[in-house]
Image 1 (cartoon, rainbow, N blue to C red):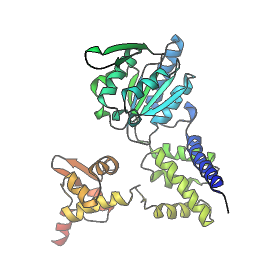
Image 2 (image 1 turned 30 degrees about the horizontal axis):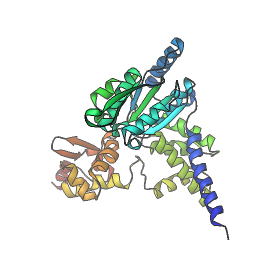
Image 3 (image 1 turned 90 degrees about the horizontal axis):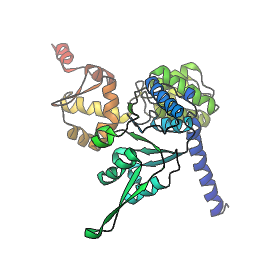
Image 4 (image 1 turned 45 degrees about the vertical axis):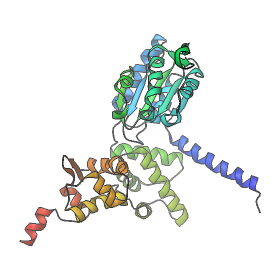
Length: 343
């Protein structure tokens, strides 16, 4: 029987391998980063110009849906200028003291990456303004009439911030990203296929072109999802004792309840609820969420964007409406066609 210490060590090793696997799939060079051409070119010019002038690159804001490569871009920016990358997130910075500790511990030339920057509270944002603009940190010591402000000079650094909710950032904070604000776009099927091909090579997975394209089509135009589906298809093949061919891929994706368009069961349930209970809409978000026993934010931020991207769902002033294409996807006739068929 294994000791508790041995089991603990094996667990830590397993978790470490999982983290190193995700890290291994992350592009380490600009040439390996697929897609987002305009953003890469703009960043290349920004960084090259800064290096040529021997200046610190200006602050950069990246936004867009999750899984499109914002964190990877932050790593590449740091690598390009030969700087250390310090990573944190909005929710992790709870107090002004937390931010002060992070900023004062930076070394000259560091890149500070703040994920989910929209979750910083307003008090912390205000402390960040002079740090970004003038390289100074203002700290208030004491309370009441005896309170005084101490100003600390910070080493030169570049802030790279990422968010999925840019509308939640205040205008003063957005305006201080003088290096540029860039929106990451969804990927094409060919771009996703190229990403999967590279990941398969790193993971030593033999996959034919047909299987690779099948995974790419169901990846919701998102690299993170593509890598997830590739790993799960590999697991299915290993457990089943089969090669990763098109038949195995389809079985694995069916087990994950991912259909040909990349919709999961919740996506299909959302369309079905609107069609069967509300005649295809219009219907309000809260009503849909209650019918699915889901949170409003989950439906609005996770399910709806992809359905709208595929043209299966529309948002109107009166509520959500399933399109003709959406009816067809779940095997239902639109109301007009259903009436004409009855006549």
